[in-house]
Image (cartoon, rainbow, N blue to C red; front, side):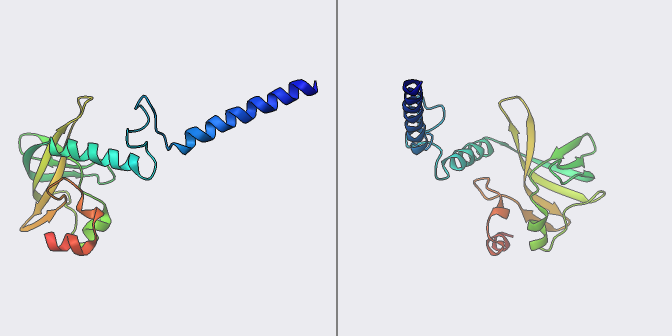
Length: 164
């Protein structure tokens, strides 16, 4: 019985050593499934990969301009629906409320006339989304993304004000 317990302890120790070694590699994998050749997803690597993919998708977008009357304003991730006179188009990517508050501008509301410059993106699953880059309300143009497609609300408020 003592011998069996000894062997179980040895096996568990070996398993722990291999587990710790795998964790120490920060997700590096020979297959490339979980990591990159440079070294896995540790130290923000996963976030960098997502950002690069997102920027590539944005840069592949087709520029479109949508103008019309705001039909529905569902800002909690559901976008803004604009009635163009011939169709209703849902626009995404207007940014968080704090960004608009920092600019001292109200988000477009139902009944307001808007002109939205955007990028039409087609994802690998076939879904199409229109992501706003600028919104014009009356004579006020609100920039939402930089030339690389990065959201301006992720910058400091001062830098965003300089781009208006």
